[in-house]
Amino acid sequence: MCSISDLPIELIELIIDFTLFPIGESLKNALNLALVSRTWTIYSRSHLELSLDESRVRFQKLRAFTELCRHPLSTLKLVGALFLSNVGNTRVSLLRSPLHHTAVNTFLSKRFHTRGGPILESVFTQLKKLTLDRVGWWTLNNIARDSLCNGFRSVTELHLRHVSFSDIQELQVLICSFPLLERLHLILQQPYASYSVVKNPTSLQLPKRLYAIDITTLDQATFQGLSVITPCPSLRQFCWRSNVFYELEDECRNVGEFLEATGSSLVELSLIFNVDMLSNDIRIRQPTNKVAIVQQFMRFHDCVDLTKNPSLQRVTLDIRPDPYLVLFLQYAIRNEQALSVQSLYIPFLENVIFSLNPRILSNEGLTQNDLDIALQQPALANLRRLEFGVQGFFPRQSVTEKIAQVLSGLMERPMLLLPNQDDCAAGINFL
Image (cartoon, rainbow, N blue to C red):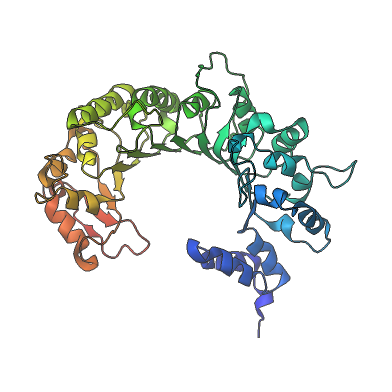
């Protein structure tokens, strides 16, 4: 009888990947799977993310971590994701911005001994995902910068969360230092009130495998960041999250130029806008009528021309509050020329339909019929697949039929209406 340790490596990888797919139980299951055998330990540890934050430095835990790294039986080298943050469970230096803290600098510059190399790059040799959180680039010394740019060559996914650069060229150097990079997540934060456009970016070559970029715009720093990664000829997926809706004109101009430079390589586009999120500028307030919203969506239409991306196949739209999705469809993508988009995913379509009920007072005078008409506009003439997230506003067994009744005009086309979930048995093909 074959024992579990005799299973082929490919089958072990499939079992571990399938078991750890539910995000909520991944940590617990990964630790349990690592106890099966030494072979399983290797492939289980690659799913773990190690978090190192300021509390580990402040509470004198760095020495214990160093000793663990030195231990010959340590499995830290098998960890697949590393999270470095300047904040943690500590009240020390609360008066200072986390961007000025130095915990990440300590981690990256700490050496095994006087002549040894930095600990992190020496230990985490199989790292795939690296996250930097609340880091001011000016707080990193030369050792830390050199370790970050040259010590993690195996990284394929880079997350920069609330990272700030005094010179945006340093961002380009950092991104280009990961030759195997495939996914990039940017939430940049500007250190000063002024904003300067990069006129002469350096001629560094972006990673050839970089196919997915996800940006969240909090202020103008992310716009500046886009300028140093334009163009990105290998880009296939782009996600744009905006929480500063009232500065959308500048956002649209920068993102529009970025998408136009991407050209035919772009296949998937996600747009996530929160219209009600107030800007950091205290002078800006929520608009009192629908006119201001329409004006912003019209600016999007003027700056972002998706006809420049002829290979675009799938678009995700998450516009909040829910009724404003109709306005976005009416004014932001009202092209007379049909886009190449064949699949549209609206995660909260149930919420949108419910919010357009005549008995709801906050629907801005919009109706469910307006949504149906907006989805039939010429720009979406090539649409053949409409996906939605199941939210529970309708009975699960009949959710597809209910939505089809509301979108009766759209369903007269050849259209596939499908819940976005693993089990798509509830989908109805209207072909």
